[in-house]
Image (cartoon, rainbow, N blue to C red; front, side, top):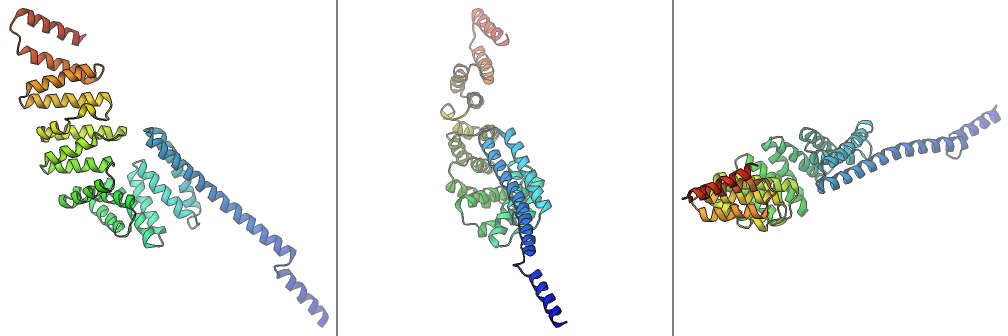
Length: 341
C-alpha cells in the first residue's frame, strides 16, 4: 500500500509539474491563444492609427471629404477595441484615437463622450490633462463655455509643451470670449500669436475680439498680417468673412486691413472680392477717386472673377455722374448692354 501510494503521489506531482509534457502543451496553447488575441487587437490599433494618419494628410491637403471618410474608418476600428476589450492594454490608445478623430471631423457630441472615456482611462495627472484638453475643446464647440474653461484651465496647469499650450490657450481664449471675459480672452489669444505666429484661426479670433472692442486699427493690423500668410481654403474663407464683418463695423479699419490685398496670398476670386469691397468702402466715405481706381483694378486684374462684373457696373454708375452729352450717355448704354450680355 505504501509503495502504491508513493507511486500515485509521484504521478500526481508530475501531472501538475511545469515540466510535464501535457502541462507544457496546455500552457503553450494558452500563450498562443493569448498572443493571437493580442495580435488581433494590436493589428486593429495599428490599422486605426494608419487610417488616422492618412485622414490627417487628406485634410491638410484640403481634401476634407476624403479625410473625413478615413477618420470615420479609424473611429470604427478604435471603437471595436474599446467595446470588445475595454480593459486591454490598447484600450486607452484606442480611446485617444477616437477623440482626436472626432475632433478633426467636428463631431462634437461624440468627441465630448470620447473625451470623458479617455478621462476614465487616465492613470496619471498628465493623462488627465490630455483628456481634459480634448474634452474641453469638444465642450467649447458645443457652446458649454464654463465647462470648457474649467477643463482647459486644468490642462494648462499641467501641460508644458509649447505646441499643446498654444492649442489650449487658443481654445480657452475662445471660451472666455464667449463668456464675456474679454481681457482674459485677449491675453490668451495674444500669447498664442507669440507662441505660433503663423497659426491663423486664433489670430482671426483676436481680430473679431478687437473689432467688437472698438479697436479697429489694431484689428486691421492683425488681419493684414493674416493676408500675408499661406492659407488653407477654410482659413481663406474665414479671413474674407472677417474682412466683411470688419467693414460693417469700422469702414476705415477695413480699408487699412485691405491696403495690400493685391499682394496677398488669396485666390484671385477672393482678391477681387476684397478689392471691390475696399472700393465700396472708399465710395461710401466719399473717396470716389480711390474707389474708381479699385473698381478699375478689379475689372482689369480679375476679368473672369465674379466681382469684376459688379465693379464694371459700379464704374458705369460713377461715369453717369459726369455725363453731359448724348454721345456720352449712348456710350454708357453700350457698356451696360455688354455687361448684360
